[in-house]
Length: 445
Image 1 (cartoon, rainbow, N blue to C red):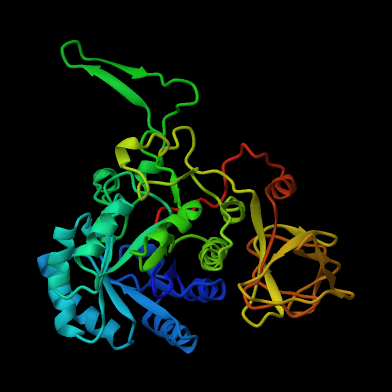
Image 2 (cartoon, helix red, strand yellow):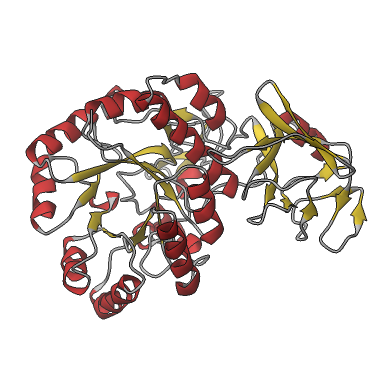
């Protein structure tokens, strides 16, 4: 077993999600502004000021922020790249995540005191390639998603001082760690430059064409096979955390998802926090973590390739749908001050919602004119008696997108999540479980 505990690394698409990730158990987060990041849309939610606030917030907790500068530059952009790295370095992130040997050299020259982490986009799969980057000064390699645990063991045996980071949860790419041109071909949006359109998630119709006769006809797929021919399931390694940590060769476990919801950032991070802590306490139980992970929207789950070879897998694709509901829907998110919550799903007087607390948070029962907070079967619940907004206006119901905070019956921990089971949420909307989820969460790193 490792002398030091493994790091839990969560996505930070904006300042709010950065704070949520830390409150729900992350040791470190990754993200940055959109410039030269592989998540342009996510990065637009950070500007240099808010990103600096995020780094300061992390450091006040004794935690870390890794800056993503991991797209691939053209010759014309090299000076811009240098300027951007210099600006990011001034904010004192705990590492720079980059993708190419040239940018490794630039980062080492401009910011010699900031550790360099090599992005999964570099597709490192073996000790030989790892050694090349290690010799260039890379401190940590984020391995290719397609790597096996045995190959990680081989790399660590050859380079014991090199840190290894592996993905354990989130969207999987149809291509080899993002080396895909489908989006560029169809929409002009280049995946490895941060603007993937997720074309692999779409349904396609298949046609056969005979050039001699000029005949084209549509091919019908088998029932239940469907037309999502490139749609990969989401990675979910929670049941294998004990096996990964027993190997003693992994330094950081990474959750994908900078463009996903605050609910995802909190619940997924918390599930893996508990899995890691339970392992070290000798109390690991996979079903506990899977129950929470199943509450999130997903494309079906696969344990991917870390514990088995790609050619041995036959459960990695979702052929009949792009995304499905999880078992729960977020109803509201409590603000940082803990005094009110913002609606994420229709909520009315008399409703009861489950309270999901950040890691380590405590709560006491309360019953007053605004609502009741109580504990049943080790779960905390909030019964809504009054809906009064920040301007003291009383309401019967609030709907998703309502921007004013609703007063709570008692102060709750920052970023507490309120949720309900999906059947109840859909019933409120007049929908069924077969309906398409309304807030599709795109693939992200």
